[in-house]
Image (cartoon, rainbow over all chains, first blue to last red; front, side, top):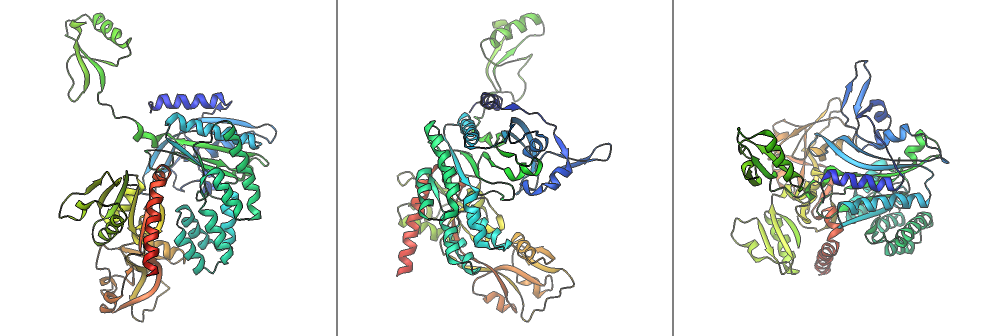
Length: 358
Length: 211
């Protein structure tokens, strides 16, 4: 993988070419924004502080909310933004805050099949810019979420436990929960069958159709259209359908997706359709976007064996212009050159040279 | 190459014997050695022997592609993994236990001694019951006997230890057994190898239950 700077530049170029505008924002927002939309956040823990006027502010735990809040998009006049920003979130395991650098885009306005394909192609090109060993998993909130609601029948505790089983591909506990919770066997069977769908998109769609569930037809049609588009553009090779993937249904609707890179232990890209959130701020405006977590890509970076290509040592009596000229000559050949009067302790240069040898 | 994390001890040995019978053998693993990593390149498998409570962490962070861990450890650790199979080994139950004829006082928080604070907190939060968790690392049954706690949340196999200390199961929380888990990213890139193991184990378990 290229350096983070090179990768960020490549990603920005992808989004610029797709007609997205760069969006720069402050590192903080009013805390009330996150309080009112806390269900949209992955964690309620936010770093807060007071400004000199006593206003409660928070370091951004999320970028999407800020963009949606400030957008002027209408259904007829959409907006397309991309960003490179840091967000501050608590790690669930360590309970410590972490700065996460992410790059992503948001599309607000009318989200038709073309817009969906546009966002998905940007996501695929983004993953491809990181590594050629990637997979993009698609799902649709209109499929498993409806079956989940039917099975849970308003029992929020049961719904949460079933949701955990779905996300873990845990069919054994899902069926046991349904049995103990006296879930209608037909509803339990449908939920188990739907949540187990995972594979190449054409096969997975055929599997869903074979379940003959009328309320899945619209979502299946939408996924089929997306698949046809990606396939026609030669972008479908690394796309799979996995219905165990589910986001919060209060905000997300329609297609959702996650990207994986071989060698990184968790998904590095996450996105989807979130009309329910955008409509809270701008009625009638649809929205879709994704974020790529650059901070999680660190394991792909090759550890550097050397601190610099060349350590250039100079004698105190050497004319400074001669030292700099020698360094510039080496730098013009693309080498990293560090100038020192003597070898600093702990430094690992690939090569050491004295100015007198230039 | 499939990387498998096994818990040290009886459960790990049992799972290894099962996997070895399916062609994923690595004979050194059962020898008297202090090695923690075992290869069999021909079988395409690498085993790590780790502390039972660490298996899910090795899998979640991708050091191992799959692993075997008890459901009790899994629920307490709340790891972000796929749980692909209930192996049915080491069956017991996570339960609330207390003194025989225990009478709960509802005008104060319930004092709960446990090795599983997350499990206990989740269970009582679901009932909107305020509790005070006393985290212990062993001999949990002693806590109510010495009035350190009102009840305990712990795994119960036969109930003999409880009975011998004047305690009994008051409520079952969830059944516990060994589970086969997988890393979510590894599942994407080694799906065929992982599902081959899953299906072979399913076949063996089905055969055993048919006997």
